[in-house]
Image 1 (tube, rainbow, N blue to C red):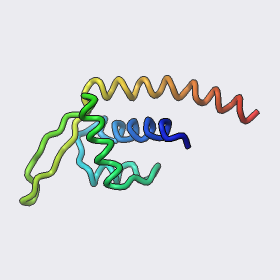
Image 2 (tube, rainbow, N blue to C red):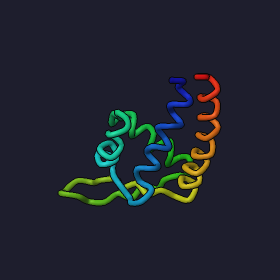
Image 3 (cartoon, helix red, strand yellow):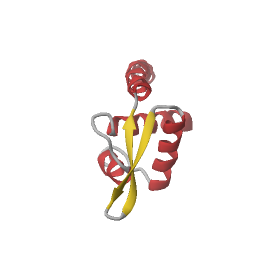
Image 4 (tube, rainbow, N blue to C red):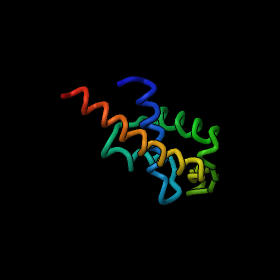
Length: 100
């Protein structure tokens, strides 16, 4: 898969994983695991990129004596999911043309 396309898909999968509730790294990996394999290093790179793009905000919280970062989707992240849905329709049309 093209690296740029894959990057976009991974970003949107992470956003979708936290769309309905704030979450933290391990849980995000667990939640997306039925559809894709995501390493911790890849996830944290994605989370940092999404935070810098103002799509996520991070809230550190103490959990069992350790700091756990919770990620919250912002309106820009929700908008990105909606844009992706529109883009995906176009990609599927192209795919249908190719496989004919």
